[in-house]
Length: 439
Picture 1 (cartoon, rainbow, N blue to C red):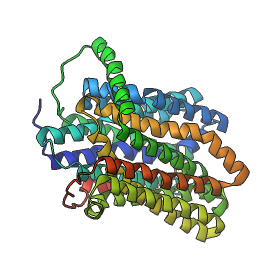
Picture 2 (cartoon, helix red, strand yellow):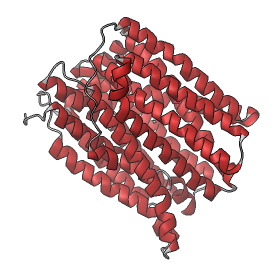
Picture 3 (spheres, rainbow, N blue to C red):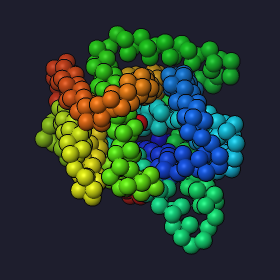
Picture 4 (cartoon, helix red, strand yellow):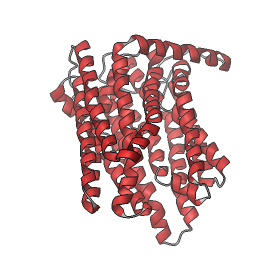
């Protein structure tokens, strides 16, 4: 086994990998639908393509987490980067529904593979060097890097094609540039994972048949742990409420901004700005989490603060429906900033509590279970939310999402009662450079 990095060095590497994982997502997110539309796909076909991605993520989320626990962190993270690299290359070149569906399928596999290994690697590395080592600061850096990378990526992916068009580039090529840049970033990630993520746990070398046999056993251990652990059950309940809320704002905000700005194109640019504001606020919230924890003292209390701040932002977004024009756009952006700042505070606390309930042998499986709950919440709620919005407007949907989120804070209060021993707060430290430049 290679020499392991110190906990602080592991935190920096985790932040770098987290940022490079999500930067490609941000880059191609704003143009994906436009690229498919420009190349001849109608909305119904685009819906089917997106469904391919969603179904594969839900189906593979748990098995791939178990695969990471059975096989190792670095190998699964490398596989995730490889799938995503090929998916983005196919996306940039695709001109038929079948190729777009292939790209979506490959991205679904890559997304499922990448949902747990990096975080599990960081926690395992810290525990291997110091079993009682601080996790909160590194998890904060990782969440901050994810959100910062998404903010940078969304802005670049949203405005780069417009800039290229103004200097005379062909529209088809201009729309393909963000996926191409995303593929380049993913190739860099692949190299970083190979070089910077030594396996923290010595694992028995298994043949492919043995790995395939071990994966369902590991998955079942993780499921039994989740069912029998009341703290995990409470955490997953909050995750479900979060999934419903995130789905509500992601489905309805673009249409709201299009109405405020007077057209789909302006609405798309407006959404890119609003989303980037939200991701930047999330990055700042995660970076500030260790400092806020000096007041809250425990992870459950920090999680409650994050949930209540997020719920307040959702209520503000619902209230912004009374405004029109530029005032409505600015208010929506401010509400997004509050929502995602709260999520930034919540993320490190929730991740710490989740990891504290899982042993190394099922850590990635438990993280994947949490991600699966988030995905299922969005999938299950989508039809009901859209029907409610069609009949009653976005206000009741957003108001209900904020109310459900505020109510879910009681779950973390219950976690706090079960976990009475306060954890000393780590010294606040600024996020590493990688976190600021890189559901």
